[in-house]
Image (cartoon, rainbow over the protein chains, first blue to last red):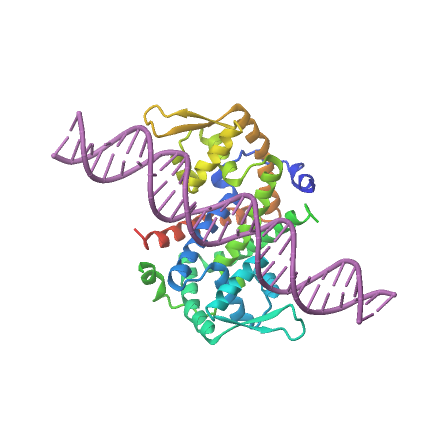
Length: 165
Length: 165
DNA sequence: GCAAACTCGTTTCAAATGATACTAACGCGC
DNA sequence: GCGCGTTAGTATCATTTGAAACGAGTTTGC
């Protein structure tokens, strides 16, 4: 109801009518699905990893030991998703859990050496996929793209947030 | 295996190591989820429509009567998704089905007058959401963004396609 | 003609997802 | 210390998803 106020009126839309192909949320979703599908299949087929699992490995490789809560904040994934991803990785001994010394509810996750070497193995492939995707784009275009995506994300968060506080 | 050849070697990656925040597929997925979630909730709450249903309404409003196969080609959705979306809209009498005169397996879907007026009601809202999302961006930035998204989509399709023909 | 091969759309099934409810543990106030 | 509200993580359930199997209808080759 508050988004109605935000968005429903007063924008004086250019009265171009709606064409799906030119509609940004549609373009964004389609592009994201195509890219995610490609990446997800690559990780799944070659390493048996889901995307959430891979993200988890990445942040642990970057930031060292983290609790699940920190991972949730860092990766914009649901806490249930993180929990399941962590369990899967635990079973494969790619990450290890140690008790959090100051908080008995929480655990600290960290890569095992096995997990670290898997990360080292996958990372170049991940970068190569990115490079293949942006081949033919100018570097400043890529930089702008990333900036705009971040901006869109925060705009969406804003619009969603003020509708349900 | 052929994507291995395409992507696994020879790219001479700039050996910047992988940071998740700067990784394009990640940024794309996160941004898309944020935007899609916003839009999906809006359509669901106000009109009881899923995103696939809304897409179907859009293309029917744009292009007139289409078969499901044509809709699949037009919207990059799975045929199962389209089938289910069509059934939902049929039950609500927002679209109508007529037999395809030249092909007994196929049907032609078209908006009912009820469906058309729902479309007319939602379209301005959809455009307003888009306008709110891109508020603060320069028009040429938006144009570039759309172009880049399309390029990424086709690059992903290319990379996926040559891996499994 | 008609049988094999193919296409349109639906059904079926298994996996992924996320909202909700729950358990265990923390910290504050008293 | 001991309730009361809060937080970390897990379990449960309903919904969504797409892959594969299927039935009906069409096309091709002979």
